[in-house]
Image (cartoon, rainbow, N blue to C red):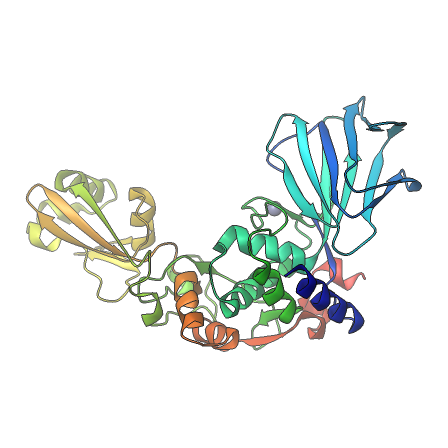
Length: 390
Ligand SMILES: [Zn+2]
């Protein structure tokens, strides 16, 4: 497997197709002030305040500690003194390192390519500068697991690439492009459990989804649509031509296609009353239940209405696509799908891939009137500042 991956890399490099690097702020949910870095594979050049000082061979450790706004740098044998900025630059394309924060003590992570460390008064800014496609492999593994087909990974990674490129300016003022939390896209580091993910991504390198005006789309996706995706404007404030509702048979009979819940009838009634539905007290009980053969934007009672997404949020339901049935003093809630329902259903897309559809088929099915194209062919006005400045 390793040899195949290396071969794909060599072809990618030879054809000038290697993706651009992206700077990801790591361990962004903590203020890290000390860490140990281990060169897990390949050797690294160590730069201290822009001066190359040594080479760290495979198997060597580097110790970084914040002291008075500067970072103290040691390896197992040498003291490199203090610095403001430290860089570990990989010598080879398959190099990776492990980093373990020790203050606070956190689970270590393994990352491809380079590590940049900048000291500030209270913490170290840790940035993984990594090839975009390797970053996407880590994101896709975190977001979608390891057991799916290649065409699904291509579709998922194209959405994650579209998201990454749209948001490259997001953390500019902090010294990196994207964070590793849900605020941007969850990234735990190197994709390690399925080499097929990176291979699928390399086969579609550079490809993003644009609308008909050559603007990057909002690449929404969710776990399971329940059989019909949700129009964007039914969930969020804005509407988009490409985020319309589609009937989605591929999501039926998948792991998260259905869910059930039970709530007390008196709680439901009190809830509706609290939300301004005064007619609840006058109307016959048999009509104050929700029924959705197809997705509805509102639950309407007499002249009052309540958004289905609001009900989902308030009751913690898995989706806004559900029916209710009376059952004595209780209400049975029978739901469909999991997530906000907008854009691509991951489980539906996995099913399409198993049915031999291509990633183009998958994306064109879930997104209306979109173009799949290389982001380098987009007009400059469609790109973030980080790419326009290059
Ligand atoms: Zn972020």
